[in-house]
Structure formats: C-alpha cells, structure tokens
Image (cartoon, rainbow, N blue to C red):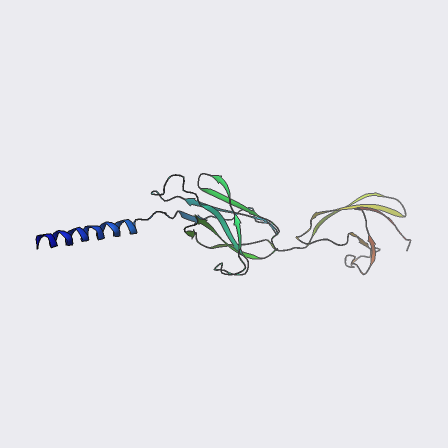
Length: 200
C-alpha cells in the first residue's frame, strides 16, 4: 500500500512539472503603438509608431516591423499593403509613403512579427490634400505702341498634371469680364511670349 502511494505521488509530481513546462511561454509579444501622421501633401505622408519589447523577452529576440496601409478597408482587411518600417530611434519607426492619391483617406497600423506571433497597434487614418486650381503669377516685362511682352510662372500645379500652358487676352473695355479661352489664346511653349496688339 505504501509503495502504491509513492507511485501515485511520483506520478502527480511528474504531471505538475510537465504542465508547468508546457505552459511556460517562450515568446513574449512586444507592445506596438501606432503613431501620428506628418508631412501630409497631395501625394505623400509620413507614418510613425513605436514597438516596445516585452520586459521578459529574451535578449536578442528579433521582430520585423511593418506598417499596414489601405485606402479600401478601415479595418485593414482587404487591399492592404505591408511595408517595412525604418528605425528612427530606439523602439521608434517611420515610413514615408509616396505616389498617394489626392483627396483620399488612408488607414494604417504598425505591426510587429517575430515569426511566432504578430501583433499590431491601433488603426488610424489620414487624408491627403485635395487637388486645387493651379496658382500662377503674371507680369508685364515690356511694352511698345503695338506690342507687349509678358511672362508667367506656375507656382503650384494644384495636384494635377498641367497639359497646356499659355496666355489668354482681349482688348480692354470698361465693365467687361476678364479674358477666357474663348477670347484670344496663345499656347506658350515657354513662360514668356510677345503679344502683337491690334489697333482697334
């Protein structure tokens, strides 16, 4: 009977030891925090985030850091781009996005993957600047009795590709509107052009 008790106790100890060994974690998930967006333009934005290792993580345990980005899904479930982040400082990461669409909302999150587990931070969003009317400058550089020389410069394309550059003009009459493309038009290969004036 005593021997049977020893066998039972020994079996129980083996069971407890094996349970403790099986439940002991070998990989500790880090803590990712999705940061704010900066440098937003029509086509670019800079994402940021931090990934803090778990205090019990083995020294040297490596994690791959990514940013998940999508303009289609607010929950990052479809059409998601997974792009590696760039380490900026200790536990800090950034990503510069290019070739974005103007006036579009994007959703993003930072993610850490070790090959054994993957965790992500909160999902945030930003909206690129919208396309606007191009901004130009115009100046009169010289004039004679029957001609003028004018120059212009596009200082902001407004977020779109400009296909035609030129000048529009018409004879001034008090109370009339500014010239439009239905009036005299000169398509300029350069930003400066001489306009011959007709006597009225």
